[in-house]
Length: 265
Image (cartoon, rainbow, N blue to C red; front, side, top):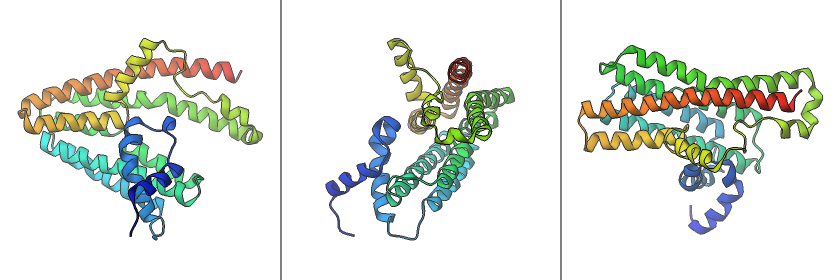
């Protein structure tokens, strides 16, 4: 297939997510690759759902390597998880390319299901690797609880939105309803708070921050650290991650409650 790269870049931007709606790393790195693959796959029999399914399989397979617990297997696992995320980018680009930027709800559901199956579970499997290497099972219990709490406010908000739509189907045609849907953290944060938030997202945000940080840790473990040192560094990182999850739960719960109470009295 003969095409020049600048021409592809012009077309890629037309069917990819806007910069403000995408992850920084994904927009500047993964999307450069996923857009090209979407163009190559446009006229094939492969559908976005095929790619989503492949993404799920690769992501689930990556968890096997995390169970080993050493830096070498963690590196293989996280590279596979990176590939799974790249496939996730490709399926969205391909769906928008074929549908002229209109993505089917069924495809969005399948894609969201992929995110729920893989992204929240990644820290848990990394923690299992520590337990296999001799760390206390209490660490695993704490990470499972922290992960559940991390996602609970979001699920509660989405449940409220769905119930509102079920009770009043006219809301579907009410654009103001969707404008008023709370988006989580408000824009009233101070500059310092936004700076701290960005730092946290870079190192612990899902999925980009977590993937990239674990990649760096695993590479460091393979080439610079012994197994004991690597386990200690990974333990500290996951402990900070669990702490962030608990803090996120507390702040998000308060924010969501205030926003829901304000908009939907």
